[in-house]
Amino acid sequence: MDTFDLSLYLVTDQSLSKGRSVEWIVEQAVMGGVTMVQLREKNISTLDFLNKAIALKKLLSLYGIPLIINDRLDIALASDADGLHIGQSDMPYQIAREILGYDKIIGLSVETITQAEEANLLDVDYIGLSPVFSTNTKTDINTPLGLEGIATIASFSHHPMVAIGGINVENTPEIIKAGAHGVAVVSAIVSADNVKTAAQQLKRVIQF
Amino acid sequence: MDTFDLSLYLVTDQSLSKGRSVEWIVEQAVMGGVTMVQLREKNISTLDFLNKAIALKKLLSLYGIPLIINDRLDIALASDADGLHIGQSDMPYQIAREILGYDKIIGLSVETITQAEEANLLDVDYIGLSPVFSTNTKTDINTPLGLEGIATIASFSHHPMVAIGGINVENTPEIIKAGAHGVAVVSAIVSADNVKTAAQQLKRVIQF
Image 1 (tube, each protein chain N blue to C red):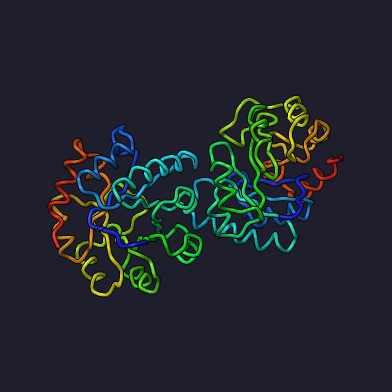
Image 2: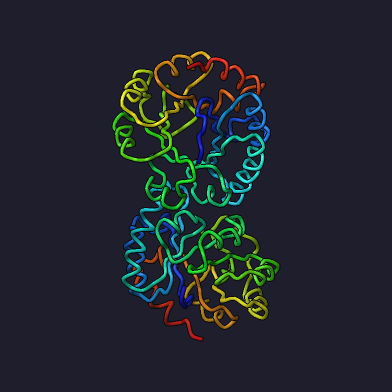
C-alpha cells in the first residue's frame, strides 16, 4: 500500500446511522473530507458483510479513499479491500500479515500503554488508540487512555496513530495536539443529521 | 485434498456440550468412529475461534481426521484446516474457492431441491442437505427436506451428500437408504452423556 492519510477516519456503525444506508453515509462523509473508511459490522451474515464491502470498495475507489475492514480477514480478501483493522481479540497480527500480504494496510487497536509498546515490535501500518474518552459505541473497552495516554504513547511509538472514542469537534484539537495523527469517529459522523457538514466541521479543526 | 469419508460427520456446538470442552468432545467422538469434524462457532471472538481451530487441527491430525471450519474462511486459512463449510448466506462458493484453493475441501449447505440443482453447476467437494428433519439446533432453517427430499436430490446430484438435522440412531439407516453418503450430527453426539458410545452406536447403524 502506498501512503494513506489517517487524519479523519470514519468507522461505520449501522445501528447508529438512523436508518440511512452505509453507502449513503460513507459517500456524504467522503464529500465532507473523510480520508479513510473502516467498515465495521457485527451480527450480520458473511454474505451481507461481503456485499457491503464490495459496494463500498467500488464507491471509495472513485474517490481514492482506502477501505479498511474491521476484524474479518476473509472479507478483506474477498472484497479486495485496502486493508484490515484488528483488535486485541481478533486475528493475531503476524498471521493476518502473512495471509493478507504487505501490499495491504493493517491497523491494530491498542488499549493500554503496554499494548502500544508491544505494537512497536510489529510492522503494523498504524495503531488505533482506543478509547481516548469513554463512549457507548464500543462495548469491549478498557479504561480510557485520555490525552495523557496519547501523549505518552506518542513519545515512544514508531507508528502513525489514530485516536478513537468519544471524539467530537470540541475535543479534536487537543487530541491532535497530544500527538495523534488523526481522529477516528463513529457517531460524530454517522449519527449527525447532516453527515457531510459534520465531516467538514471535524476536518476544519484537524490542524497539525 | 485427497479422499475423505463423510459417513459420520460431527458438527460442534459449544452451547449443547454441557460444559465440556470442544477438544474433549471431539476426541471422544473420534475414538467412537467420527470420520470428519466441523468446528462451528457463533458469537465468539476471532481469536478464540482461531485458537479452538488450531487446537482441533493439532488433535485431529493425530487421527487423520479432516477438520472443516464453518463459514469463516479466515479461520480456515489461519488454522490450515482441511476445509470450509459454507451456507447459502456465507461467502459465495467461487470466491471461497479462489481464496482457499483446490487443495482444500469445500462443502456447501443446500436447503432446497433448487439449491441442490444449482450446486450441480459448482465443483464443491460435498453438499450438506439441511435439514432432513426439524431440529432446534440451527436457527436459519427452511422446511425439512425429509427422506423424500434426500432421495430426490440423490437421483440427480453429482456430489457426495451428507444429511443434517434431527438425526439419531433410529433414523440413520433410512437416511443412508434414501441415498445420503453420511450423516452429520450435533446434539446426538455433543449432548450425549457418553460421547464415545453415542458415536459408536451411530457408526454401527451406518451401512451402505
